[in-house]
Amino acid sequence: MKALTFLSVATVLLALPAAVQAQQPTPQRGGTLNWAIAAEPPTYDCHATGTFATMQRMAPHYSTLLKFEPGNYPNIIGDLAESWTISPDNLTYTFKLHPNVKFHDGSVLTSEDVRATYDRIINPPNNVVSNRQSSFVKVAAIEAPDPQTIVFRMKEVDASMMTNFASPWNCVYSAAKLKADPTFPAKNVLGTGPFKFVEHVAGSHWRGEKFADYFRKDRPYLDGFRAVTMSSSAMTNALAGRQVDAEFRGFSPTERDRIVRALGKDAKVQESSWLLHMIVTFNTEKKPFDDPRVRRALSLAIDRWGGSASLSKISSLGVPGGMVRPGSEWSASPKDMEQWPGYGRDMAANRAEARRLLKEAGQENLTLTLMDRNIAPYVTAGIFVIDQWRQIGVKAEHQQVELASWYSLQNSGQFEAFIDSFTQFSDDPSNVLYKYASYDRSPVAVHRATDRELDALFDEQARTADKAKRIQLVRQFEKRAFEQAYSVPLLWWQRIVVMNDRVQGWTMSPTHMIYQDLGDVWLAGDK
Image: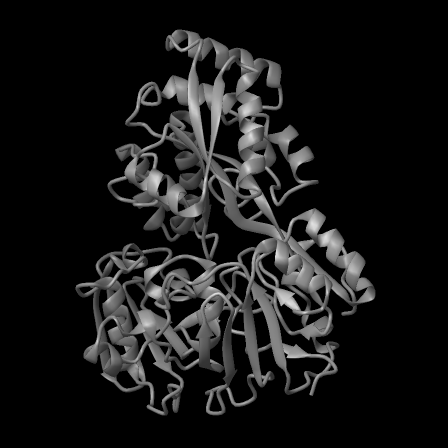
């Protein structure tokens, strides 16, 4: 597959037919992959964070119970699990583990390591942070009846359990290390993945080398990898100048074009919709944003369809969508979206209604501060939103802050409205709707509102195994969420990954959190 320049149809890349896959060149062994990453990890602990800066470094070193099948997202296959069964009532999950799996220190993995890992996620000890705890609240008990068997017993049905087990964040740790020190993974790397940890030089690079005793005996192909830490602008130059071979998160259209011009026939571009979207979030604890009329008016004023057409040419911002990724198996159709407040294509009518709502709420001369991150495409989104509000007579100051302040201000409630964002590892509704639930149930729902009707719809879809019925509940959730407008989606991002064509075997997907273990990656012409 030579020089896939400007390929924009994600499904071509995500689900190649078996016959086409069979025509792929034979992988070569050896070589070191040099790739770029834009941020330092706040911790080495997969369970404690949600940033790609940790995930993309940790994935090559760890295994998970299940994972998403490369080239066939969102199908789920085994990783440490060789096979599994689910009871007819969906309340018992039994996994058989691959035999002779070794940690990088030579110790043998057993079901006790899996049990200790998930117990740490569900019941984090003192000084341990678990960002995945809410995903497993319905687990009643975890049993390890023999060294190769692990059993999860549920309190009630959870339609997302297989997706939760496939989460790349559930890195399996050594039970012995956790027993000695529950915080061990925060500063140490010991897994069963295809690559052993070598070194981390903060601000410079991260290195891994091939694990000779990896349980998949034909992997990995590479001798090792070197992840170089650099700014977004620097990585564009580095890739264009052939100093690195890849970056696995994504570039803007202008950055893509620059790299392609520099690499010529050696450029490989893969594009997809992205499980990452920009949001406008209001602080419902501050007046007048406690009034749904004001929030709905500000959403109605935004021309999402027109904004998509212009902003997608200059930034990572892409198409309009609801609370689930547009084009996914769970998403609404464009026709359905047009019925939501703020998604109708008649902007004159939308803005007339927005002005009416503001007048009714006594806010005809509304002024506010829009807090924003000081990087693209956040600034681009903020400028666009402020211009849209200006057209209904709303004046907004653009407060641009760096990342630490952006998090601090939103978490402390020191904002009126801000340009928010959210990403996840899968399209499963429980993963993505969590952002829009009540604040007392979801720390990421920083609108600070309580809405038990939304919570009831969230819980109902989570326990509904019938997909068609679950989709109906997702639509009901979105309808309620748009009417209340605590947080409203602005635009979904477009994922554009550019790499040197010598990098082979890497799988594109709608999320930058999966397919990062590098076990299937190889370098053409490098032995």
